[in-house]
Each structure stands twice: as C-alpha cells, then as structure tokens.
Length: 592
Image (tube, rainbow, N blue to C red; front, side, top):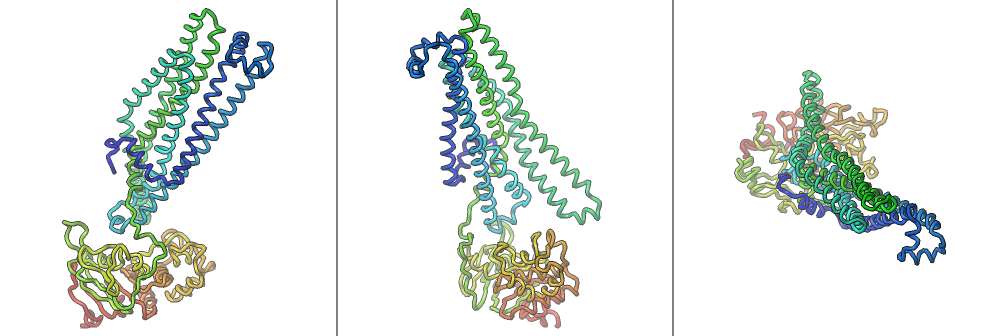
C-alpha cells in the first residue's frame, strides 16, 4: 500500500479514472449535463425571488421598471397590483422545477456512482482471481477479502460520490455566489470569504487526525476479518479448549478502535455546520439592521434581504456538503490507496479462458533439470529434478516433510513456473502462454477437498454454472468414484446439501467427491496429494479401491506417506532435499 500522506487526492482520483470503463464515462458526461441543468434551474428559482418580493413590498416601483415593460405589456397588465399573481406563479413554477431537477440529479448521481462502484468491485475481484498462484500464497487472505468486500465497496462513499457532489455543489455555489455578487457585491464577498476561510482553517486543523483515523480504519478492517476467519475457522478447537474469550477480546479491541475512528470522521465532517448556521443567522441579522438603517426604511431592504436569506439558505448546505465530501475523501485515503492497489494489479491476459483448447498429451510428461526457489537469494527448494511420466502410468512420490514434493506438484500442475529447467508435455514446454491449455488436462485431489455449501451435484461439477451441469455425467463420475450407492440412499440424492466445507459428509465421502470431480472434468492426469492420509485404514482402503478402479488410460500421480496408498503404482520416486534420491517399484521400496 502506498503511504496515503505522500500521495495527493488528485493523483489518486486520476489513477481511479483509468479503471472507469468507457460506458460509465459517457454516463458521467451525461450526468455533468444534468448538473448544469440543475444549476440553471436553481439559479432561475433564486432569481425569481427578487421580482416576487418586489411585487409584495413595492409593486409600483416594479411596474414602472423599464426592464419589465415588454413582459408587462405582453401579459396585458394595467395595474401594479396585477403583478402579484403572475410573479407568484412564476416563482412557484421556478421553485418546483428546481426541486424536480435536484431530485432527478440525486437519483441519477446515486445510481451511476453505485454502478461504477459495482464495476470496480468486480474488476478488483477479477484481477485478484487471475493472479498467479505465487502471488496468492504470498498474501494474507483476510486482507484481500477485506479489500474486495469492504474497501473497494467504500470507494463509492470516499471517492465517487464525494467527487460528484463536489462538481454539482461547486457549479451551484459559483452560480449562486455570482448572482448574489450582482445584487450586493460587498456583503456577498465578505460573507463568502468569511465562510470559506473558516472551513479552510477547520479542514487544515483536522487533516492529520483524519489521515490517522483513515489508517486505523483500513488496518482495523483487516484485523477484524482475520479475527473472524480464525475464530470461526477453528471453532472446533476453540470449543474444546474453551478459548472463546481470547478471540472475543481480540475482536472487541479491534472493533472498538475501528468504530472510534469512524465516529471521529463523522464528527469532524458534521461539526462545523452548527457553528456556521449560528454565524450565518447572526450575520443576516446584522446585515438587516444596517441595510434598514442605511435605507431609512424596511420596504427597500426586503427584496435584497430575502434574496440574501434564500441565497444563504442555499449556500450553507453547499459549503457544508463540499467540506463533508473533502473530509470523507481525506479520511478515506488509506482505504482508497488499498483499493487502488487491488484495481491496479496487472491482469495476466494469457490466463483468461477464451475457449481453451486442451494441450495434446499422447506420450509423456517430463521435468528436465527443474530447479525452483521463491526468490533470487532464497534457498533452492528443488535442485535439478529430471523425471519422465509416461501416459497411462501410475507414479508414487514419497519424501519427508519439506523435501520438495508439494513444490514439484505445483510445477507439474502449471501453478508455479520453474526457476530453471522446464516442464514439457510431448516435448512442448509449459509456460504462461499455454499453462491453461495444460491445466485443462490435469486435475488435483488434495488431502482436504474444498467443498462449497451447495448440493452434491454442484460439488462434483465444481466450477460449472448450475444451469449447465450435466446430471448424467455427474452420476457416471459418482459411480466411477464408488460414491453413487451412498448418494442414492439419501432422500434428496444428488440434491443433498453438503453443508459449509462439507461438514455433513464423512472424510471418505469428501475424498470420493474429489475423485468424482476429477472424473467429471474428464482430465487425463490425476494428482492425488496426500488424498488418503487423514483417513482411517478402512476408509482409506475404500478410497484406494475407488482410485484403483479408474480407467487404466489415466495418468495418476500419488503423493503419500503410507505404503498402502502406493501399492498400485508402477514406479515410486523418493525426493529428499529437493533432489530425487532413488526410484523403483513398490516391491523394491517396501518388500526388500
């Protein structure tokens, strides 16, 4: 995240503009036209005050005004008292039109700003989802989730709406001030300058506190989500250990700081209004006194005082709205910076699935002199792996924890590119340009199967839209994974809900859903990564039998610690300290 205090709001807004698509920019252009129309309507309604109050106070003076003579003649008016009705109607129509355009502006402005917010949220999520696996493993998921769910969503309130408010209120403020300057230049200039200086002074004094509170809010959101994830994710152990209060205290302390900072921003943005309202009321009273005293009468002062009062009633909320918008943007700079970081992630276009054509695989997968490390000066995880996997073979991988097995599998799956050497399929090197084509051929069954809170069919056809799931194919996959007999005994069959993270299923059932998912994908290569290590021996045996019954034409790679999971492998390879130390048949490893 960039340091918010080192970047101006204008720079951040310019960066945000890059992420607004062309269609939304056209909508914003139309919105600006509506702002001009609303400003014109407001100006007409304010200008209508002068003749209306003049007709009430001194109709004779207005009737003989040469500027109104053409209009009076056109209306056929012969008496000064006849001015009151048409001017009252004109004033009422002008005020109604002004209110109507303001309501239309509010509706359009709100809809457009939230639509842009939705676009930005989708873009941040999309850019995040398409990042390489190496980026994902280096991140804290709580911070990313908080960024997409909360921070990008807040862009509507801390940047888009405030900017639109600044434009619309700025136009209106300029128009009203210009009109009042024409009526009473000295008083208007003095009042407007005084109000502006007061708001500027308050803004300068509060800026450090707003920045500090903004940083606390963005950090608090990350910590709050992390606390929730850890507390609910480990609820089983927490209930057994009775450690609820530990997690509650972390949540309480973090949430309290976040709420205090949010309250500070609201208070700072709202407080000046009350001071300014009192100041404006006193000021109008003083102006009224001097105008009446100077003009030796109240009648001549009424139109000017009415216009100033109505103008002040319009100006004060506008000034407060400008101040509140600037305060919201200043207080949200830290959140703004985090959101821009998510939106500015480089989009690897080669990862976008535009009808991927599966990579041909007829002969062998090979790792040639593969080395891997996470950074230039980091230690080597793999130190020169040479391995050939023939199509249709079953390969077992063994090795102690930290030997490099998981990294090797990540490279095989096309998730991590080798630092040196190459992964090839039928002598075609796998890189960023064709990794999606290779991944359409391969699937992964991990130790802990990721299940969504949906039904059995949706979990087997994972990643397929609900309306495009082929139920016949789902049933075939379940049968081949030796799961169909269990599913068909349940009242709702394939529509049975699995619960969050598959909590309603046994460990063996979850693993067989993983196998069925791989079969549904119709992959040619299946990688079982410790897929049976968490199961008891009886359940493991059932899952192994399910794997054993799979099509002999499938290429299977099995990572396991237990020898029982490797009995049907054609070759077993042992990895230690990032190199292959030995290879051979099951008998050579376990029966010798």
